[in-house]
Length: 356
Image (tube, rainbow, N blue to C red; front, top):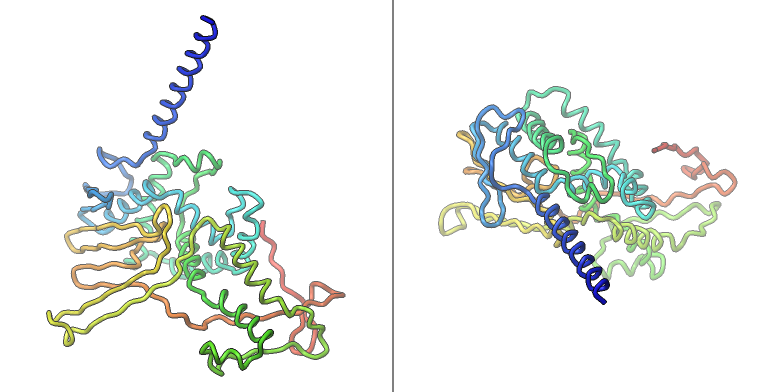
């Protein structure tokens, strides 16, 4: 009995030590909101004060220093979120989450967000003379300084993610994913096509769809065996988005009252971004103050400028009308030659891209 008691006490002590070690390690990984840091690229002293809501208030002597500090602070708080968003746009989620995310990667690679991001980075950052270019690079410098010298988030350790520097291309990958979130046609076009196929085109008028909506049927000499394809597309897309670990941005609305219509004689502006709840929050609130500029706004993880914010003189918001700005086409493949599709009464070869 005495030996059993000693073994029990020993095991309990070991468990307690393990728990202390785990909690100590997790506490060590928490963002540090005090002390001093040396950050490469910053020319003059920068102060970051965190309020009771952990919102950083950055005071710097230049805009470049402020954006370097912003990138560092943003990465300290949200590096894993940044990593997820750039991997969504680039179709690289399955590298860390396994085969269950292959369909998600296929969708975003097929959309070509990575191709557009690479082209945009090359087109808009050929030189670095414009202020938006300089501040973007300063923001990325701050992120990469934290990646090199800061703590490694526990998600990176658990998933075996190798930390990679952020580039201008990643900024466009993240904004490309946001653009996809607002592309309402991916959801509405398949279901409207299903309604038209099952109930007839006249039924669409009952749900306020005007006659400007056009449907093109397949030629008579092509076997139309895909009547339920629209439902399959909608179901597949829904399944893919449910597996996607990065939440979509849903929608928004906004309104403005001119100075002649307001009692104060000033502009009244309101922007309500219908961003779904997420942990961490989609937005990252921050305040930047320099001798020449004041900026307060909500930033997207990995994006250098606030999409909703204000200065001393201007305010802006983000909203999205449900415009029909995308056309989806139902292609017919050749049963005898799967690498061909039907177009203008003839079979044409499919163009293929190999991704690794």
